Length: 445
Image 1 (cartoon, rainbow, N blue to C red):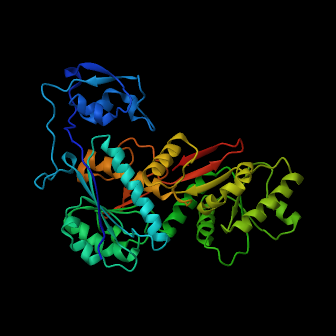
Image 2 (cartoon, rainbow, N blue to C red; image 1 turned 135 degrees about the vertical axis):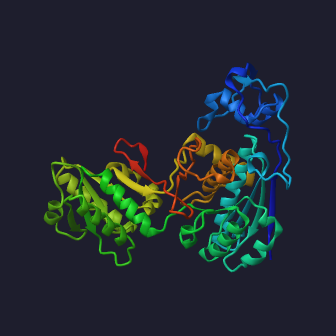
Image 3 (tube, helix red, strand yellow; image 1 turned 30 degrees about the horizontal axis):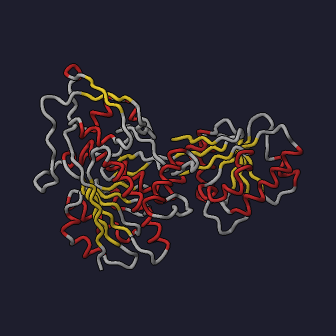
């Protein structure tokens, strides 16, 4: 049975046509308690965009209005911009409420549903944030469970009116949803599924995650380039269940293309043979052919012994996204050995922005976010802000390319590239570097 959830954020949209600089005069406003950008803009008959343009600091990530601050108010002109209603005849999404559809498992039956409920809540928080920027959103959400039927959902008249649909979670629903959005000239954002062959031919699709083969190749290429001045050492951990052979094979091919010598050794090698894999004249980059926690712990033990015998030899490590799950136990080792982890997401949960989002989530939903990688509510927030701002600014031509607008993501960087004549795939990726001075940096590529 269809489950329809509606979340209306009703606010007044105003014209965002920029005023000529030489025609503006500037007034000021002293910020009062509980003032918002949207409320101030509405008070003076201007758009949030005009307000932000007159106060460049507002564009900075994490900006908050503070009581007592004096801000600039640009002149609205001879008359205030007329509000635009969300009516059927208004086809330009930039001048009306954005209609967003969510087709995901939204239930408490299993972990998939619980994760997607949290992701959905992050989207709702993004909508609330966009309301403060003068962007109105009309959300329609359907429970598309793994054993559900997508056909009656797509037959719902509300689905055909959506400008953008986020989903599905399960790959088997991608084809009918891709066909539906192409027919209705709406956008489809695939937030988690990595299997979407329709991406090659359907220009309406945005895919967030790459398939493992493409990801292995791009990560191996970037790793070989970034660490070109290091001596690579690949350690065989004899893990018959490992899925990391694709990466180490791709990485070795890149090293051979670049004519970079490397060493192979084993976790079970004798100390003398293990030591022969390292060089003294340049830093060494250690790579395991597994992401398994017990092997990582064993390698750290070998490196501790080696470091005591050869204290002058420099060591760094290149790991896997799964290692993020071991952070609370291995953080000291990550810093000691300059661990670089390739990841499509990362957030410092102790940063002021992340703490604020966690606090808002707790206030809104009376519980904490799930302890998971990624934090699904933060992922939903990032996706919501990115696509709503994009549609509001560029309309249905939004392509998600780098530099379209300034947004510092909480957790998930987004930078899309078109695949031939098909859809758009997120190519944003980063190395999370645990530096030996106990700080963490992210290196985007």
